[in-house]
Length: 264
Image 1: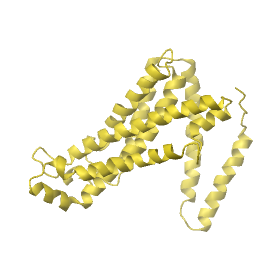
Image 2: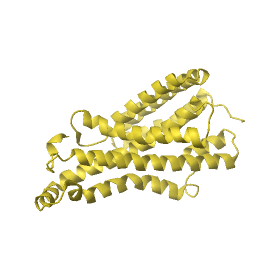
Image 3: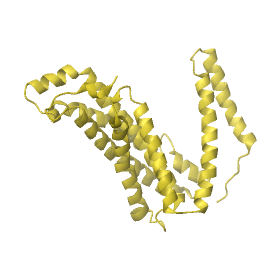
Image 4: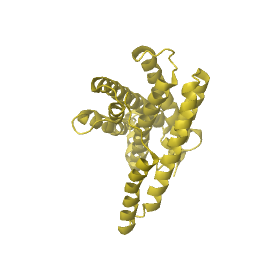
């Protein structure tokens, strides 16, 4: 592949755009200049470190190293899911619901893709496993965060309605069924929109990267279709699991709404 190398000078020119955006935010009093600069610095430092780590990992392919990196990625993603919620469950549940759901969906789908679809040899080859798992976790994390936030916030706002339905004899599953469906739907809408306009409005990131890296467009398209199908499945199954666990946690064994289990 004929990859055009980028120098520090090239990247600094792109960084000037962030600087210009920060100046505009100062001018408009958006109070975002510092956040933009910090985010840009974090992106640079984090990606440079990841590049060094991946170079080391690629040269020493071993399942133990892959497992360690995967656990770290899952731990960070679980923390981000928890932080993005206005209200979240107290105790271990606040962190565990998102983490367990991402593990169930992202890890299983990634392993199935490596074993049955991409068919890498060995299956734990880091060059394929780590980027694929990273894309799965990143997108599933966003879907689960949206679904849980919608579930908790709507239940909180409609708590009188939910309790009224419980008082007339409905089970907790029936009382929260509409909220549960809307929560899952809200998590799936972004990926459905992305798939609907892929190739028409936007060229997805992985496909663009492969084309810039010199891959034939036909192969880049095939991989992008695969990735989008895997991501949609990961978001869907992950959100089903997270919303189901979250909905169950909102009620006790006597079908009573337990909002005291939420951190305000």
